[in-house]
Amino acid sequence: MKLGIGLFTAQLPEGSSRNLHTEYRDIIELVKRVEARGLDGAWVSEHHGSADGYLPSLLPMLAALAAVTDRIELGTGVVLAPFHDPIRLAEDFAVVDQISGGRVICGIGLGWREEEFRQFDIEVSSRVRRLEEIVDILRLAWSEERFDYDGKHYSYSGAAVTPKPARVPPILVGGFVDDAVRRAGRIGDGYISSRAEPERVATALRLATEARSKAGRVGPPVVALLQNAFVTEDPERDWPMVRDGIGHQLGVYTGWREGTDVPGAPLKVTPPDEDDIRRATAFGTPDEVLRVLEPHAEVLGSYPESHLILRLHYPGMEAAPAARAIDLLAERVAPGLKARAALGSS
Image 1 (spheres, rainbow, N blue to C red):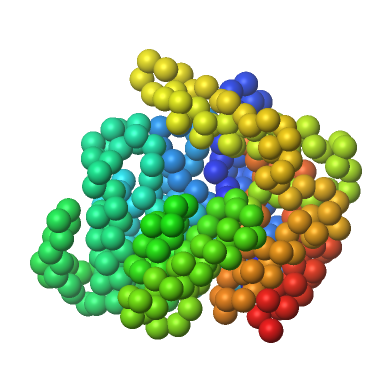
Image 2 (image 1 turned 90 degrees about the vertical axis):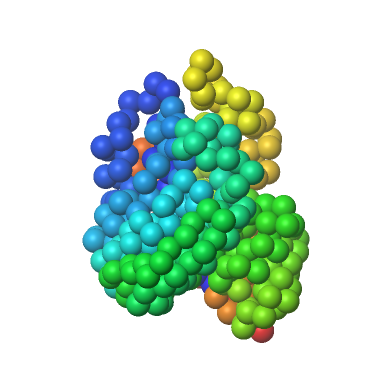
């Protein structure tokens, strides 16, 4: 099991004293720290037109991270496929993969926010077919000198994508409901789960594995889990900061579902209850965080390649607390998680 940090989203709550230049530079420095502390990866995520500046351009950010690291994997969790031209997406991934020396993971998803589809003039009803075609096109673009493709939304004749990536990036498909999980197993190299209990993670990974087998794909899937966390030696001091950051992180999604952050309706951030934030977050001392995450690690450890991706930096947070959390995670939590994952593989 590989232990990554993310998602980095560069969101700035209204009234924050921070600016995007500082936020982007801090992400770069935090990712350098992730590598220096012996962790395994850094992951970024995408949305568009968000009032808080949610990161819209993942490949430029990964290029910056690739330039300052040598070892860790760099993943998208996820690129929202329908909003991208497939050929350009293949080119951008290939260039970043070359910069990194073959360390990029292509996490890809459908998108769900209607405002984004309106802004890009894409029919929401087309998103599943677009995703499936884009996955096909990425594979062809990265492996064939030239290729033809005749789909419902994308068609090419004698198309060439150069350069090729240093390695063909594994394609991990995100999703929540069972149909999306099965789709990930059927079309992807793997599946990304997000903020779920260990029992649900185990069920989802089994569904993806079964769908992969039925599709005739060889071997088990690559699997990944995104999870909110924060490691601290002073939980009482740091909880309000983490609570407020996660409140914004999750409250933005609620605001979008309620139809805000659109023309004529400014973004309304509606945080979950504090108790709900606590239940959904692996927060506390190193021992407390380890106890919460060990069952997840055991589930992931039963797969030959898995990624546990922990968010430690939240909207509005300064870099220093996240840096301390990275250090504590690497020194006092990661060894226990890796040991528990090894039990899952035995």
